[in-house]
Length: 375
Image (cartoon, rainbow, N blue to C red; front, side, top):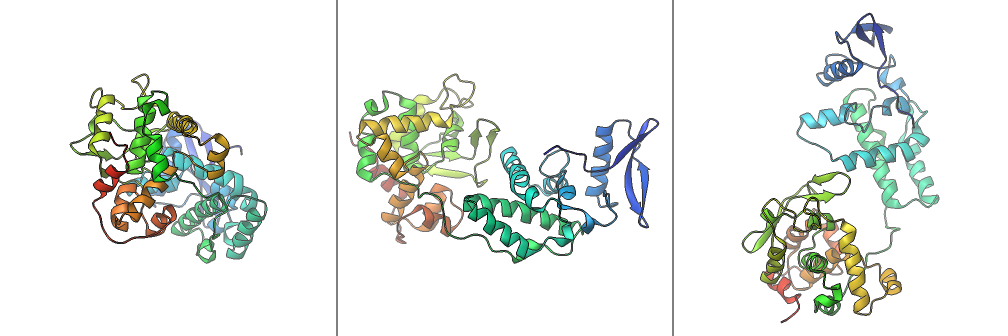
């Protein structure tokens, strides 16, 4: 989709002017700015302050969805992002890019030509059903719907429409994705019984062992620095993305995770300095998350789980989260404690990762230690 400016601008003499409507008549007002970029900043600031309504149409509801969507999901033009930043909510670059991709791939083709005031709940629901019938994953459809709902909610806040039509729409239920597999405790112990299974690579071994006893995501492991290792625990508050760099964790939380002495010792062998990455080949940036994953694949082959079986069971690095979640609950850890360890935010998500539920509490560190290879 070719980007177009969200507002109508015109240059008269040295200064840029922008269009507004007064008594249903379009008039141009000066920004007092000599460059278009500063003129855009001026207009956005006035809208943020709700000093006036700037639009390419007389009536906000008469805007087509395509016209409304032009400035969305770009930091320099999206009013919603600016509004949220003023409230202290800053979205990651990955989240913004994903929302724009969903808007361009799924929302604009369906609703682009429809006027904002004419978008109805029934049409949205039928659109979701049609996407499902086309084979699109339910998760992608629901994420696209969430993007639409956020946009329509903002349109209500800005008084472009009176009601969010997404409020009357149901999300798709059930899962059409393949269930994530997990290893048994015996398989995990066999996997970590020897560094030779990992071709002698201490980083791959340590990263996977750490994930098995903490449930950390691969990007959280990659983001660890020397300063995150403490006396008896580690601090998890960052995630590293190869495209977007260092950012907060997926849920924005900060976790202090107890770690068995053996694993702490292994982490300390990778430590260079407080500000240095633990898992880095060049000392400049963390390794790719695929570095951990391919190491796991190689080790699985060594204990007799070949590619065909691995794919059939859908075992990935993320499987360590399912593995630990199930082990903790099986050994009596409470849901609350399990959520603190794995970083889940809801009971539903915790149960999704587990195969059973046990409410009795047992010290988590003892459970973690029981997973480690002996000797």
